Length: 151
Image (cartoon, rainbow, N blue to C red; front, side, top):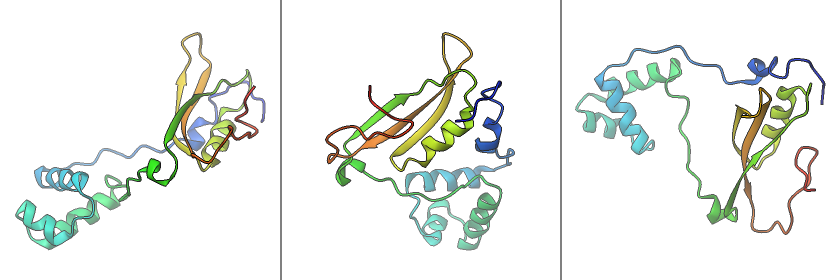
């Protein structure tokens, strides 16, 4: 890991960019609400539900996707059904001068990483990345990595 004097200096380089605010109306909100309940609905089904034409739904979806309001359509996986029954939340403390962006990039590279957030510790301004990982049943002991090791 690289040592730097400002541990938060490179966070902007790896942080998700925020999307500018997009104006939406009641039809857009109804469309988003319907998709939040079931993202697999057809455009025709959405049109019936919202009482608009399928072309209105298609145009609205295209605009919401282009503007970044809709970032994607995802599958919700039951990880326990695949042998990953435990989610572990890990707090990481980095030493003074450590480049936090390198730590976060390395954590994101772990395939087991779920959510990742950076918070400031109560005891001072030291940033602390925290993340969740999914632990498979077949692991008999924690995996050792350069970032994650047991003592």
